[in-house]
Amino acid sequence: MKSRLHLLLFAAILGFSAQGSFADEDKYNVLFIISDDLTYTALSCYGNTVIQTPNIDRIANRGVRFTKAFCQGTYCGPSRASFMSGYYPHATGALGYANPRPQMGDRPTWSQYFKDRGYYTARVSKIFHMGVPGGIEEGGHGADDELSWTERFNSPGPEWDAPGGGETLESNPDGKKPAVGGNTFVVVEADGDDLVHSDGKTAAKAVELIRQKRDQPFWLGVGFVRPHVPFVAPRSYYPPFKPYANMVLPEKVPGNWDDIPKAGINYKTSENMQMDIRRQKKAVGGYYASVAFMDAQVGKVLDALDEEGLTEKTIIIFTSDHGYHLGEHDFWAKVSLRDESAGVPLIISVPGKAPAVSDSLVELLDLYPTLAELCDLGVPTNIQGKSIAKLLDEPAHEVRDTAFSVAPMRKGFLLREERYAYIQYGEDGANGTELFDTHTDPNQYTNLVNDPAHATTVNRFKTKLATKLRNVRDNDLQLSAK
Image (cartoon, rainbow, N blue to C red; front, side, top):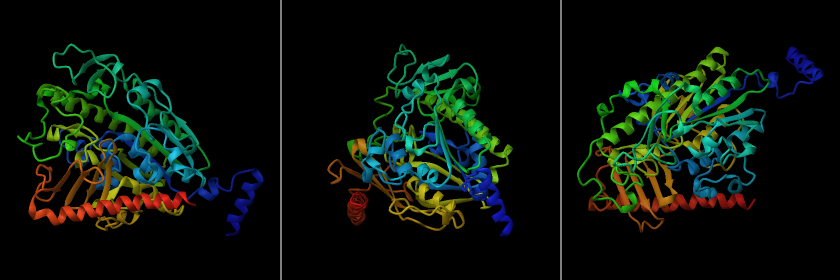
């Protein structure tokens, strides 16, 4: 005890902060790695046998991999604002793509909470919403929240305009359209190496920050933009997925849309994108190449952590902002509230804790309180996530019996229980409802909402959703009144 006091006195004489190396020597670092538009079905640690993702698998091999993790918004803006703020989208009103700070007021974001307690906090590239490809081409901050960071860095890249062989797959049936930007399915087998592209630059900057010596623990957010369209990666990542004709598409079930409401048909389908089978298969191959490229960048960040001797001092989280359809139900991209879109990969690795798989329902909203607890900072009052720290020791433990997700642009709501998935369009259900029994129908092909045998279940969910929305909003009103 006396030697400790001597060290602190010596530090004070030299002008070191009490929150510097002595006070913080036992604090965990936090490395938060997030991919953009990544479905869990595209990772080998989640069972994909076509693509190998050895670096994400490295995290899974030493962490807890969650099989039923769900985002709170099925497109970028609401999802990212939600898990960074600690509130559901309908609590803050952050339902779009703008900077969420006006809706959050003075409530600290996840990284800001750590910054206020002595952490160096930095983001590299996309953590809050940032337009892809436009925002990446421009290299700006997007809808970022400046108060959340000690420092922030962007990673501009050429995106769909990268030199190489490109093809527009969407709305290009005669093949005459050049590779074009925007939220469009384009595959580019790019010339040059990893550092030509945004994610290569992001990995390099993250490595640089990890190697820097500082007296504070860090909260480092590393935002990779792949596999978000355009599907752009260096040529070297494509051979495992060629010829594209070898890609296998999900089963196509005749009449698959007949029993679901119009609002339940996704905004991108094989039909309205005018993608024939050849283009659909190339889209899957391009997506996988983008994932492989992103995985390689994850590896560079993990290697730096190992080389600096920080792995055993750092909690590592890997996830995505939402999932992604790759032809299931002839749907593509995000926004849908089916499992492929609302579900996300989530892996949490904590030094000293055994690797495991958890089938318990969790939400991205739970990351903020969980990491605050694990880092011994105290869990902020009133935020709407729940700490899932106990699941890292007891994977079968249940923190919540339902996951909640929304698709604001179609006024859609998902209540996902262990067995049932209930989807409602409109707060009164006027635009339709869906109910799927994922035990008997794991791919969600048969809508049971009009089945008399499930009437009680449907009514239970309608009541449950109304209560959930009321509680979400009431919590926000109480905070606003303070």
